[in-house]
Length: 137
Image (cartoon, rainbow, N blue to C red; front, side, top):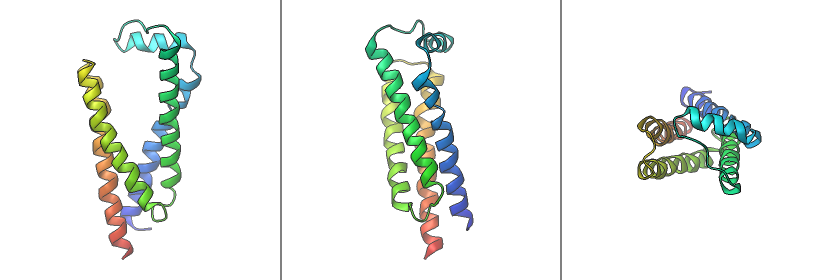
């Protein structure tokens, strides 16, 4: 396997593995969510079914996204177009979520560590995917 393909596969699987950690939050007791929320400096976790629903469903979405990245990272040539699509989704989502974070006045560290890395990682995936295509031709 050539360098770009190997690097892209590792990158997809690393992002996938980190995203799969969100599975824990799907099943986490609400009291633990509240503890985490307070430790992050965000104050008490609001109560109500919508808050719990959103926390669990977003965590499940991240986990599913991570599983997809793990799968496509196993064969970057076969899943090239899918990887490019996922990379663009990451870039767009990173930009959107940065805007959301800023509009909600979330802590600067939160904003810096959430959206911009998604944009950078999605960009890296696109660059590597282009190299994989060039190596194949």
